[in-house]
Structures are given as C-alpha cells and as structure tokens.
Length: 191
Image (cartoon, rainbow, N blue to C red; front, top):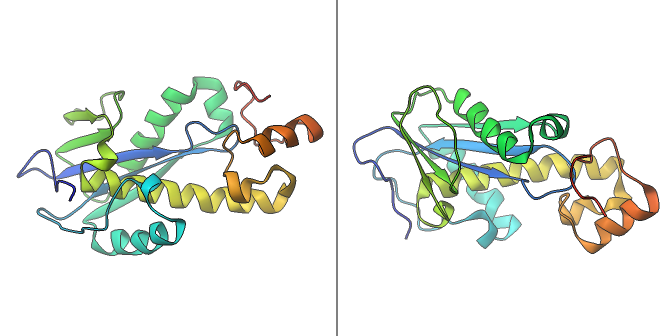
C-alpha cells in the first residue's frame, strides 16, 4: 500500500513524467492532488501496471482527484533545452494547469527546480511510494501513449504503437532504413 502523502495536513501535489528516455515525441508530465487520506490499493508505479489497468485507473484518478493536469514539452523544445530541463518544464506546466494551488510538491526522481515558491521534495522511486506520484505517473504515461498512438498512424514503420518511441531494436532499424521523422529528437543518439 502506497502512502497517502508526505506532508500531512498540506495540499500536496505529486508529479511525474513519461517519455524521458524516448527517441521521438514530446515528454509528458502530470500533477495530481488527491484528497487527504485517500485510499486506492490499486495505485502503483505505471510501469508495474498493464496498459488496460492504467487506463482504468486513469478514469478513477480523474474522477477522485481534487485537481489534476498534464503538461507537455515538444521534441523541438527538448532539442533546445535538453531532456532533463524539458522534463522539469513539463512538470511545471502540469502544475500550472492545476485548479487548486498546492502547498507542497512531491516529485518522482532526484531532480527538480523551484516552482512558484512552493516547497518541494524529490523522492527516488516515488511512484512506488506515494499515491499522488503514482497517479501522476499513470496520467503522464497514458496521455503520452495516446499521443504516440496518433503519431504511429502517420509513421507505422517505426512501431510506435508498441514501443511508444523508446529505443527498441525495431525502432532503431526503422531509423536506419527510413531515416528520422519530424518527431525524432535530433539531439539524441538515434542509431
């Protein structure tokens, strides 16, 4: 069972991103504020869930959350500011979209930049420790998957429907055979 919060008594937003290690596409992040003492035994790191279960939980998260939002940073922006800065910017954009202002932020990982003078804590493997971060990981992952599925219709040869832009053997072979698409991150090692 994941913990409901790190900062008891404060409105706390959990943040996570998806798509950081991909060769193509935007990076997505989500911010989620859950009700105090919220319980959902099914919430977990999105990587530990089946795609079907992630989408089921997305509906539950969107229904139950006090507030939630998704932020996006494009592949062009990633190439300009690098993936670490892009991941943090995507989280900031998600936080910008919240209808409720958090009093504390917890972030999956070990890197973040100050946001609007709100105290934050980074938590390594936080998506497996705190419900709001797990919820954010599920939203970021499912919204990014939807985006990559749309791109896969345009570029089926890269197998994005399966690999979502990650550097699989099939994806790298398609780059070698067909070159890059307008969605590839040009500052990444693509082959």
